[in-house]
Length: 135
Image 1 (cartoon, rainbow, N blue to C red):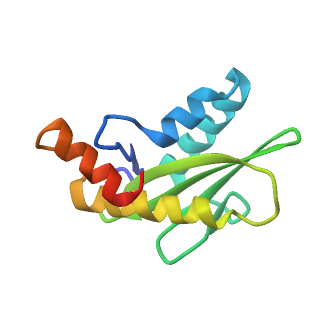
Image 2: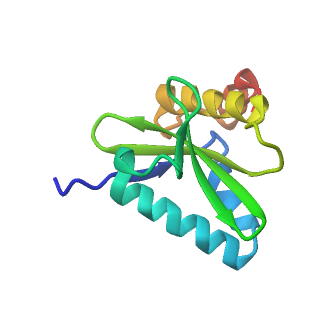
């Protein structure tokens, strides 16, 4: 093993990737900057400097990305085997990380831990999974 992490995005039962959709919705410069920080996270993982990564809960971390006067956060969690799973992202407007964003990341983590992005069953069953988690 080369000491680098693997990056994976949480995929919803309907095939959507919330974190990737957030990054892709931004202008080119902002999305490129976030992608560059995600690449740094892949290389350095839990060795990345504290000013870029902050622990929010026992399991959820945030990657802090600043571009001029805009501040972005990408939420993620670590998994054994040098894996980082990215749950979601948002543009930060206040000092504190909104509780709703942390709750959402925790819900996405539960979803990933249960299904590991491998969904089976009918479309109706997959929709029920999302409804159950409130996603």
